Image 1 (cartoon, rainbow, N blue to C red):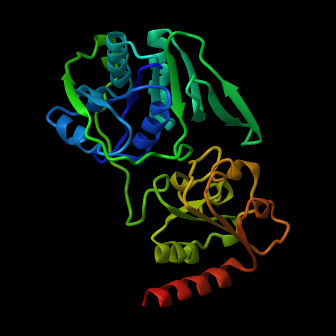
Image 2: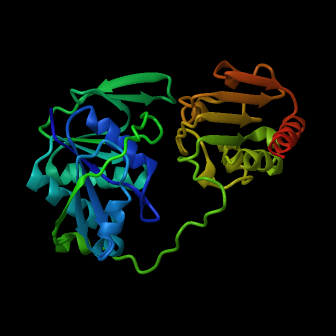
Length: 317
């Protein structure tokens, strides 16, 4: 079995669900070490937020260069850690940041890379869903080190309680990784709803909303759910692109996914088809998404959602 390093993922200084997911994927291959990259003075806070997932050890590296020089600085230090401890596999979360870091690390270490894996077998063979989820591909890196990014919400996370050992290491970011500097940044604006990729329930609206997401949001709020949108809805400017679910948006795999007025193009299905329970509301009985549905309602989404929201609120009262 190979030793596995994961680059721990954080949201607001707290380990995300995706960290547990990639740790779970790595535990099937070998012993997992989580690499924590944090600002100076915050390493312990970041590391101590990792309380779940099959992680045996945490390596903490503190540097303000991570925020100042971004992806290049992170990739530089990750590569240095790899060269020192020589793992067989390194896993990253497959979001924009994780994939860019993974690509740079693969180049620096001369390693093979596989992106957007949805499963990893004990021998390192990965499973990918391509062409909108219509084709399954099995791949394996043949170089000594495998770099793999894992798509969020596709691994059944093992939320076992853990208390891994911690080790603080010091690495200097090389001058070549400091050629670009971030001069200012703004944090994303967050509302009161759960993060889309972390939510247990997602309610999404599509072309059938005609741009009015008020009933979708009201229903989502009654369930404590996140709100998503189809590509048609975001392209039309009806909802922010940051909420797009699909092949070119975010991948979600909640316990319950409710699709409202979404026909179910392959592009959208690729981002939600691994949801545990799928409910579809559409006035078109021939909508392709009904093929995936566990429950389907043929009807006007405004009428159906208004009634469902009223019923949920009445039950809560």
